Length: 127
Length: 109
Image (cartoon, each protein chain N blue to C red):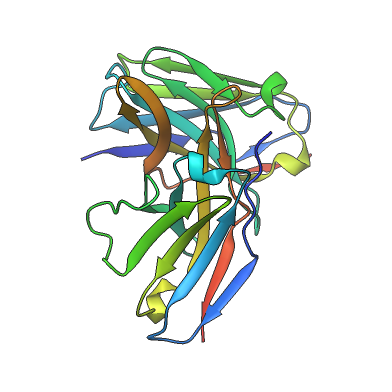
């Protein structure tokens, strides 16, 4: 059974750095084709993808937020950490981590999707 | 960057068929995934790889993808299907990143 849970501060001040931890169970992030992603959702708005880290430690970031994001993994602890610098009130959102699975055709990865999600954690940015 | 366009809202009567579209440039060449999100809950995967259903998702949910439009179809709509629906692709053409559509609010009349 795959489960994920986000943890971190619920309130951060503008200009501070946010650090969120995703602790998971039921899978290994060293398994080929597996990834963990971060997605956020401002209140009343749409989902926004932030970052994705793959089993081979390859990392991808949202182009619009790339300069502010860092994603890392600790396979031994079953954790993925996301840091976001220079937080602003517009970054107020529920932040989700999710297990990502790939589809491979003839040895080539063609897509990733998110099949298990954490419950999310609301982060408010305010002074 | 790749853009996915969804209608903000779709309304349907109970028992009827709802169709939610997701538009993108040559989206038929990509794999599309769909998520259902009810208020206060995390998203749930309902369709992956254009038309496959995860275990536990009713057969009433189906998907298709061709040309510039992918479609999520919900047959025999129930009150419990009322939710926001998001499409998603993995864009391998550029820097391998994830894109979500803007979401569609499904209202069951």
